[in-house]
Length: 193
Image (cartoon, rainbow, N blue to C red; front, side):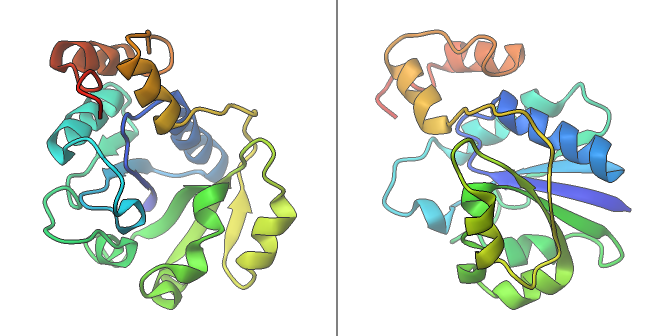
């Protein structure tokens, strides 16, 4: 199976995440894109992150009506720090995996836990970010099997969306409608998170 894995904090899962999965699915001929919310992301150590169960629920809602998207709780249910290599080992070894990453995450690949094992297991599909020179990323991940996705310059960040939520501003049309309803119903960002 040609599987795309799009992991992230998903705090909240937003339309740029959805579009990245769509672009990878369409452009790379994937069979499925699996969205994997981090349980305890080591890259976010010391930063406040919404509870894993809320991020999991929002991720499920974000992907539920797209037939070639799915959500996996493999990292949410894992105790301790979340490392990509551990997640990759949870999927069938005959899956051909494309790891879908933003340019900011891709530049850090060489520092990931067991980076060489990750490099051997996946192809990487990189979503460009406005103002982030591709050449900088290219030089850092030389030797990796990677492609750049052709996506429009859309910049959304969880930090920006959480701030909007804390300020009582709408996230409608920045996240899927069901995610927006969940955020409002559970007041996900109203407590200062």
